[in-house]
Image 1 (cartoon, rainbow, N blue to C red):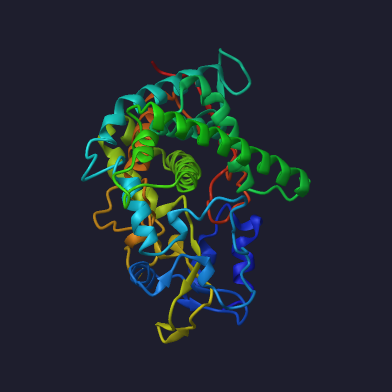
Image 2: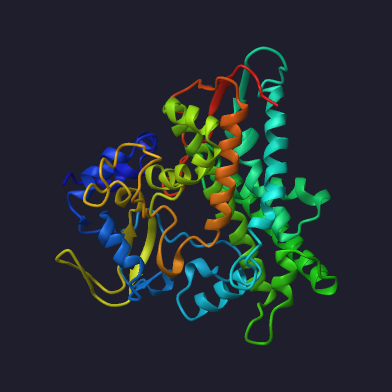
Length: 418
């Protein structure tokens, strides 16, 4: 195993195609260079660890010193950790309360009930692509799929989900864009200035949400924030700080993963024009296609900063209690011991129990919504873009190695179908 492979994986120069590095990493299923984290990269071991109660998501359980290339990823401000970064029983309590207004068994039709709104948002955004990124309305269209479609789509949906008034959605978009940018640092930007901008946006968003929560407590509406604010008895209610933390989680986690899923999906389709033509003719292909995308180009590449609560043996390697552990989801998704021809994008793949949305108690909370968003977005883009083609391949990628996706995806097309 070449020393410094984690440095290579985190290096922005390899962002466009980290998969050869993941292949190399899998040759040592549990990799440790003596200082950094223990890195697990094979499918069955990752799947087992995601269901292992001895593995903590709470960084406060870390006792090993130093060596984590991604740092501690602490959230700024006074908000408590979201349930994503907690263990049972607190994790279970907060996730259960958040799920009550979001999905089964208490709200079984919530996601399907959003389909109409999702279709209208997608239609409106694709209609807007007709002006092109350069403002032209005739001839070949030049589209930045990220800025003009993938970014605004999920945050608009999250506004509707939470109950943000339509007149406030523009302000919410600005805050979301600023916080998203903080997850993708620009090495050439002034760090202090970026930190101030991010801090100000976080404070403004927090104050806005706090006010909206109080308003919903006084005047409940048919939205998720109203139901979360109402609670269900003393053991099933969130404090205002927990509500703020959960709303911020829904905004950031729900936004970033869906942006990457849609953008990676369109990039993959443009690289596989035969599949793109099939999707245009067979809209139902979107369902298995999105599952294969979650395996082939997962929006979350790795789960860093897991911590064993006891010594754990994996493939003959003892990972000490309190150390840092990374689970390389994208590497596991292309493990040839689990998937046949794993480097091939195949929407007809029959056995596709991927790791793209995690597994176990921390599996992606918003998975049903993310799936539906991607299915609708990709099928409509395939149907309505006339002769779409990439203008730059590979496109420029974001700095973030965990939430991997293109920062821009420039596409040319000959028009927008009605």
